[in-house]
Each structure stands twice: as C-alpha cells, then as structure tokens.
Image 1: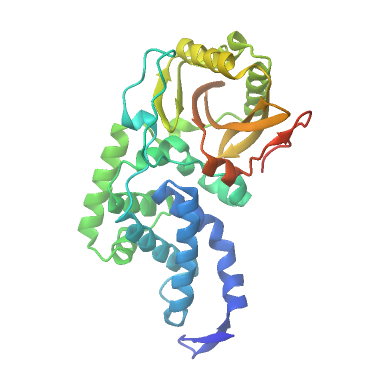
Image 2: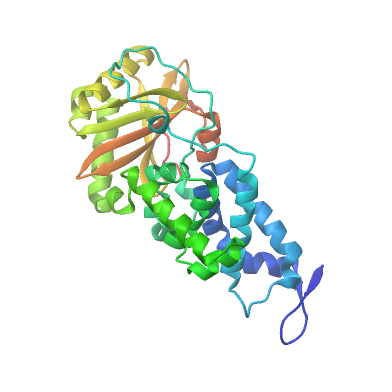
Length: 335
C-alpha cells in the first residue's frame, strides 16, 4: 500500500513501511516534545500517534524543499498538542499548588487534580536523553506547565529546538512580533520560578551513582540519620497526589521515619532513570512478596540530594514497568 507524494521532481509513491522507516528515528524526540507540552507520559504517547497519523494523511503535501522532515513533524506535533490542551488543565506538582507543610506528622491530604508525571528514560533513545537532559528536568517541565499553552510552545520551539522567530510564527500561524512577545513573557514567568536549566545540572555519573547507592543502602537499612546526611540543608520532599510537602533536612528525615514506622523496614530499592535524572523504584514487603510503593525522582546538587519527587500512582508504575515481586526476589534495574 502506498500513496503519491508530490515533489518538485514529480510524484513518488511512499508505502507505509517507508513512512515508518523515515519517521521512526524522530519518535523519541517527538515523545519528549509532547511530554514537555503536556506533562503526561500517556498523553504524550497518544499525541505522538496523533502526530504520525496526521503526517501520514498529509504526506502527499509535504515539501522537503521548504522544511526538513524533522521540522515538519515537530510542527504537526506542536499544533496537535495545542489542540489537546484546549480541553486539559495544567499538571502541577504540589510545590506549585500549596505552601510547604511545617509538620511531617500532619495528616496527609490528597489533591484531586491531574499531576505532572515523570518520563522514563527507557522510552527515549540514549541520544535523545543526552541531547534533551537539561530541558527534560522534572522541575523545569513543571515550571513550563505554569505557562499558557502557546507561550509554552513558543518557549520550547525557541529554547529547545532552536527554531527562528520566523519558523515559529509560521508553525503557529501568528506574527513574529507575537512570537517575540510570547517568548519574552514566557522567559520572565520561568525566571520568576527560579528554575533554570543551568541550575539543575548533575555531577559526573560515577559520583552520582555512588550517591544514589548510598541513599538506597541507607533507606534499606532504615538508617534515617545516614540518609539525611546525604541531603542538602534545604532539601525538598514532595509526593503527588499528596499535597503535603516538606523543606529541610530535618523535616525530610522525620517524614521518612514516619513512613518506616507505618510500613515497616523491609524494603527493596532499585535504580532507574527519569527525565534525565537518577530515580529509584521502592518496593515494600507485603505478605509473601514486595509491592511497588513509590517511584522517586532525585535532583542532585553539589553532591547531595536536593529534591525528591515521590510518585505513588499506578499509571506511573505501569509506565516504568513496576510489578509485584515474590519474596526473596531482588529487583533488576528498571529500564
């Protein structure tokens, strides 16, 4: 099965297999692009499929003399995301929603809103992870969700994809002046959140792995004092969908102690990666096995853990392939 696709040199026939071969290399970066726009792995995957469906239907109108296939696909993806965002609310983190809680013993309150989700590195190819690591940081994606959708699109197209003002204006069917105005407002809003790409860099991988290993070992030993020594003084712990979140090493440690008292001290932790950051899958003993308890995404600053965003969501577990383990099993690295 094929279709005729117009070109300056005449029409050519492109089969579905050829279309898949040509567009396949761009799928990981399209997923990352849609994720930045929507803050949801599952919605991003749906929008990638919608993008490719739109591209297949319009492929006979694609002119490679005007734009590369990559640019054309990102243009379709951006507009598909903007259409989807007309009926969706922004996805925050608790720290975007309420003030920090001063009491780690306070009752936990669940917020009934769609929350930002982490993106498994395993869904991307290594080149995409390396190229997009800074722009995929969880804190940065969360900050982007605070922007109106079109400002978000302008910022991503300019700062991440490095499109010109004219290219963005054409893609969004607007004027260069409107693009420049939207970009200025987006940068100002993002700057007000105090989250910038250069502020969320990581140490070298061996140092990072060693810190994560020490954190995991302290948690599995139920060594709260040892764990808190691995934190920055102003470390943040937040746990969507729970609204409670805490700032400071002492409150962080008190909350971990509370969880160990409630759930016991028999845990298994396994390293993974999300949003280009180190992450942990935590399993807790339950009867004759271990159940996935949380997916934790770490930010490391100056050789210590400065933030931990903890997800306890079945949809997140599914995206990371977390499943129950039999007693005595040691979970393999995820992804």
